[in-house]
Image (tube, rainbow, N blue to C red; front, side, top):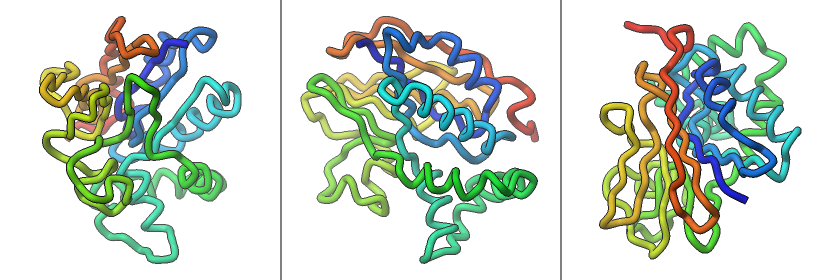
Length: 219
């Protein structure tokens, strides 16, 4: 099957729904690179939509863990609280869940089960990418797959990541490291972008939808 890989959503629920209209579950596996939550106005609704899709299309949907999900889980986990999360959009997410409290626990359970990556012979998809660090799958490693900023390691396959917002609402391709960056700043009022590829990594089409004004608070 082909792939439809979507960048960081960050609570931009209505924007996410619009982009999903371009997904064909009969022909494409949907992969979302993490950071469903925080910063936008509708984190609970966004996670609920992802869970619904995952239940309806278990073989055609992959939702990866991002650093914002990891931070949220740490805040509510046995080693919490994690105050940094509140400064990264967590405070707004907490407020949103306070009026839909019945959703918080099942959502946390589902988010904790998200994988860190998806891969095949042609590509490796994660939130922030593989770099030259001894423990790239350590969720606390600042150069690991949840947190890396800066150039990635050339692993001989295409890496597709989010995490680092690009300029001008356009995905960025780093040819030297075979890395494609898909976070086009939805929460900043830019757009949410997805890329359609063949299973062997050939890019077929980029699709971007403008962020809905209801999804974010302009300050």
